[in-house]
Amino acid sequence: GADMESPSLDLTTFILSVSAGAYMGLGIAPSNENEEPKVNLDLARHNIDLLELLWEKTQNNRTADEDRLLSQLLLETRMRYLEIKNRV
Image 1 (tube, helix red, strand yellow):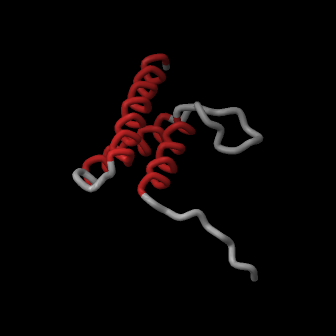
Image 2 (tube, rainbow, N blue to C red):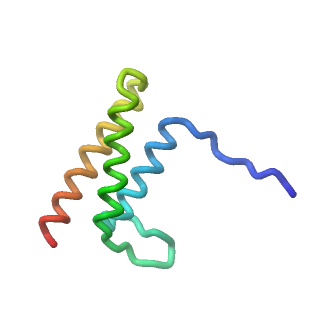
Image 3 (cartoon, helix red, strand yellow):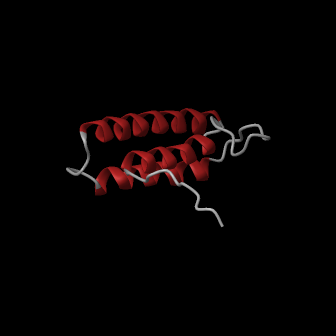
């Protein structure tokens, strides 16, 4: 078979992948193109927890860009999680 080109995996790509799971759980992004976004707070919490783990475990090993990205995503996903949780 033909070799498939996979995107290079770096910390930024991984952070964005985890945050996509959080956004899906928050109902901000659909899990697939044919579905309306649904809220799944367990999925959101799990992925936010992963972002927090990445924050802790990569301390002093992130570039300035990775630091800003992860900090911004944590702030945004935590705020949205609390907004949605308090609405339910």
